Length: 290
Image (cartoon, rainbow, N blue to C red; front, side, top):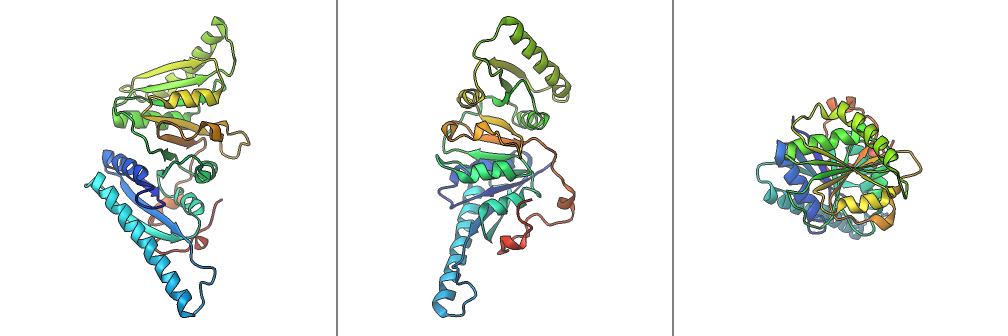
């Protein structure tokens, strides 16, 4: 079943890694890709004075040019993918949050300081993939990192579906949060994880799964797991005050990171609202983050 994938871009060059990743992912199962760029007009928008009108027209044209260039980069990476694009006036975080209600996956680029990543992790309604400008091997496994002896099913299903689609191995990297653990404690954690896994992995019999247990804190597990991973999957309990994996010291990570909201996403609006009807729309005319 094909999906709807949206990629937010700053410009074609700065967002090249995200564009290539998103286009390649869309090509894997015939998904549709939409490129979104957000821009702002002068605060004097509405003025009829010629210099203001000309400046705002130039801003609109520049935004449309960025979208066209970004679509070209995506098409060059995946010629057969259906690709469209929008230049939307407003804040990119609000736009991608609203778009996340209608699509199956949102993709953005990564940088050392990325407030957009932190904002979207707290607000998006579908999985968010953050793509660094680094190379990873197609032979590497997908890794899902979990904390507190817990295995959120949303993140696990996402990781297993992706592993099946890519023909990849899945590694579950679990932190027990303890500096030292006796053999009995390790066995207990493994047993709990195996029980949770068995109820889900039976739906994906063709995906090889390995469980690794680490007697260290979750942030260390995340940093370590990203090394040698094709994709790192992290669960995110939105609305919770503690999101340790978003701490600045851990980023940027060595691999693309999929942040999966641990809650069900409503899909009723997707059946009635055209997902990419956003050309030149003001973000304020959309509902805004909810």
